Figure 1 (cartoon, rainbow, N blue to C red):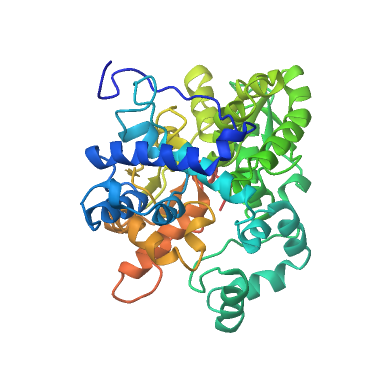
Figure 2 (figure 1 turned 90 degrees about the horizontal axis):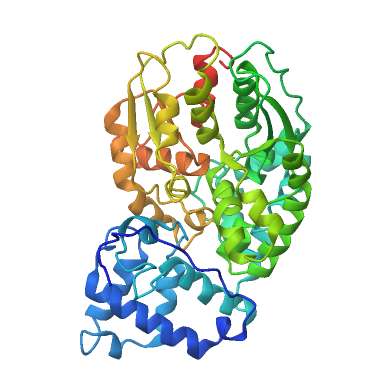
Length: 446
């Protein structure tokens, strides 16, 4: 038995269909086993709020050990987990193949699956996970939806906080009436270095409804480099449902999306996901949820993150045309779900392709955690967790701040605002994702 992550971590499939998976007694026993190991290690004390909560529970208990902590108090630890997977992949020395077999994020998922099965998941949280329905409804009245969700609109945001539990100060994404899957892509340049390559852009619910500009930038950059693209959006990848423990719905989404994407793979297309949470789901979580599904396995091996894909074609074939420097420099935040893919800092590599441009990299958690950070009970903690990343971004003085996760970028900018003595947002270019910066360097975006 070895310690210290000397062997590559491996992950076991998720036995979510078995009765024992959601059995309260079995879950409590596993929580106590894992929490006792965490208590003796404490290497993850500064990763997120789950671990400080756990250690405070133990330290404040009668015995100072786990045996005098009430099981009902474990819920606060579970609720603070954002399923970012950083503890599993970057900190924990006891993940499989270690004999301790510790997978903290998937244990938190198991607890939430139990709560979901028991009907304890709040209805408002279930409604917020319906991103396709919500995106279509809000997109149909985009100006009104954006006006009412603007955090400067105190009246409507107070009502939203009361009705949906979304913190009135949290920055929320905008909605667009013209979704990305309705946009026409650029024609691929036939004499470019990567001419002949073909790729499907899996739009993702966020890019499709909330930031089509990211998808348009990806289309332009790939067309410039000779890659023929098609846009496909069968539906959400299921990450919002995973956060709430609705694993059955995730499996349903996986089968539906895979069914639409696999014919493209058979025609020789690569699959590119435009946000890292979605590429992470397609590559890693889906195969663990449906380990016997050959379609899921086949699809997962054909999926790329957009930054990963552009860096690959740059290394294999070189990039087409001239790139112009970005004045004022670029700060890029590496999203947790990108780091969890074990593909290296691809966003940083992508931006370093731009000549004479100062690129600074942030590898700290933004604190956002999907929908977690915007909720009333979590927002202040999310700002606190993301403060080191916001401080690093502010100290660079760059005019461009982006993240592979656009939601994390907005949250980080909000953290920068709170650090400012003037209490106003810093003057930053209105770009969110690294691919938009590359498009700007090409002169394809203003």
